[in-house]
Length: 215
View (spheres, rainbow, N blue to C red):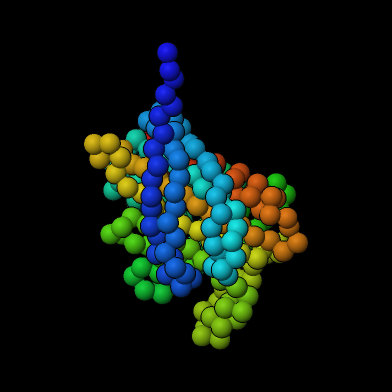
C-alpha cells in the first residue's frame, strides 16, 4: 500500500512596479489536503527586496471560504483591519497619490514595542493584487517639502514591503490567498526579522480569513 501525499505547485508572477523591480516568479509547493481544509501554510523562500538584496521571505498561502470579490473588499479596507488583525493599532490613509496609489500610515505592536511606518500601497483591482513599499526618512522629508505631512518611522525600522494576491479556487466560490511581507530593522538579525514577519503573518492572514468568512 502506498501513501501518496498530494501537493500542488503554483507559479505566480508579480510586477513589483513600486520598486522598479523585475518580475519575480514564485514556485511554492502547497499541500492540497491542507489547502482544501482551509489550513494556513507558511514557507520561507529567497526573494529580492526593493534594494535588490536577496532575503529569505516568509510567505503564507490559505484558502478562504468566500468568493474573491468579497475577500478583496476586506483586503482593500486597510483602515478597518485593526478590528480583526491582532497587534495592529491602526492604519490611516494620509494621502491619495492617484486612484490606485495611497500613502498609508500604520502602527503595529510587538510586545511592548510600537512600530510606526508609512507605506506607499498600490491596488490593482483588475488582477486582485496589492503591493507596498516603505517610505524612507528621505522620502518623508521630500513629501513634507511638498506640504504633505508624514511621520518619521519609529523603532529603528529600516524597511517594510511586500505583496498580496488572490485568485479564484475550485468552483470560484472560494479564494486562494497569498501574502508575502518583509520587515527589516537596523541592527536586528535576519532570523528575528523573519520571526516578526511570521508572527505578524499568522495573525494577519487568519484575521482576514475570519473576517471574509463572516466568523
